Each structure stands twice: as structure tokens, then as C-alpha cells.
Length: 273
Image (tube, rainbow, N blue to C red; front, side, top):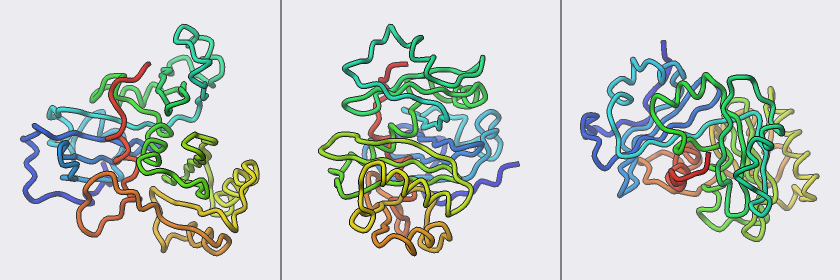
């Protein structure tokens, strides 16, 4: 049984007409969100959230959405084990050696994405997750969450006085960009607002950032009324929601809510695996 909901459903949308449309899927833990986008105009036609991952395996509630053929389908996936290799050091013939840097189970899959202009990321995907996404895309259309987030942040020239935080469920991604280069990326699991604050302060200290002067730019599953965001705002003077708009959203929706899904439009389905 899925507890998913449609955030938006264009009244003129016909699920049987898929020409010119693309399906973007964002998986986090055992749930996923999705957007159907009109490719040329980048207009959101359908946006749904909080569907059980099992819905990807055996579509029921979303049968009309997930069982038709789109011109393009892309998926962003989480990974709890990854390593970043500078392009100057990367060799495609050494992927087996890079596997040793990951925490792998016997049935995990290892994929490689170009993380940004200067780095590759090698990451694992669990067997269950591969089974779910494999019903809808090939390997070349599976993207590491950090790659998609960094692509979205680079859509507009990022500010060196910003620390970027993306929150989904109990997962936090932190990104710092300076002089058009990635200076820091990592992801963390947290269980309460204090732990969330701890990781943000820890990373800021490692980067020698003064949080009285640095803006914390938030995206993902966050809102002004969210208790964990109120905690951040109480302790930090500069906390803002990310206003980067990559796709044409329906009136009333905020860009930070769909940043990761919209970032998929910036990722080409031509990556190394």
C-alpha cells in the first residue's frame, strides 16, 4: 500500500501521450518522488511524492505513469558508500581497484559518474535498488545523488560565501563550492535537529568557514515551519531556502522543494559505469 500523493497533476495531462515528455525519479531510502516534465519547455506536468519503492517494482497506484514509454527517463539514487577520484588520477581500467575503497555486499553494483568537471565518483547501488530502477532505466541513466545536487547548484554561479545543505528524510548532503570548483561534498544520516546542526558546524569548521558570515542555503524536504529548520535559524544568523529555478513549476510551489529532481535535467544520460 503506497502513501504517496500528487503534489501537482496538470488537468490537461494525458498519461497515454508521452511524446516530448521525460520521467525523472528521485529515490531516498525506501520511498521515491517523481516528476513528469515537458522536455522542451521544462514545464512540470505531474509531481508526486512519498511513494513506496515497491511501487517501482510492481506499479499499482502509479500504473498509468510507470508502465508507459517516455522519450527519456532518469533516476537519482542515494549511496551510503562512495569515493571521489580526481579526473587527473582516474583510470577506467582501475575500477576494480576503486571497488576496494567501498563497503560492498556480495550483490551490490558499482557505478561511476562524472561528478563534475574535475572529478569522478565511484558509488555502490544495492541489489534491491538496482532491481527497482532496472525496471525503468539502463545503467547510463542512473545518477549519484551528489552529482545531481552539484549540477543543480552549478546551474547558477555559486557563491563562495554559501554552504549548501540538502535534506531528505534523515539524510543530509553538504556541498561547498569556491572559484567554480568543488571544495567539499559529503552525506550524513541524522536522527534529530541537534545532530543536523552538529554536522553543519563540523563541516564549517573543517572548511574554516565563519557561520556568522556564511549563508546556509537549504533545499529538499524543508520548510520554514519545520522544527529542525527552526533550530538552525535559532542558532545561525543566515539561513535561506534555495531559490534556484531550473524547471517551470506550477504557481505556489517553491524551487528548493524539487531541486534534486530538476537537477536531473542537467545530467546527460552518457556517463561511465
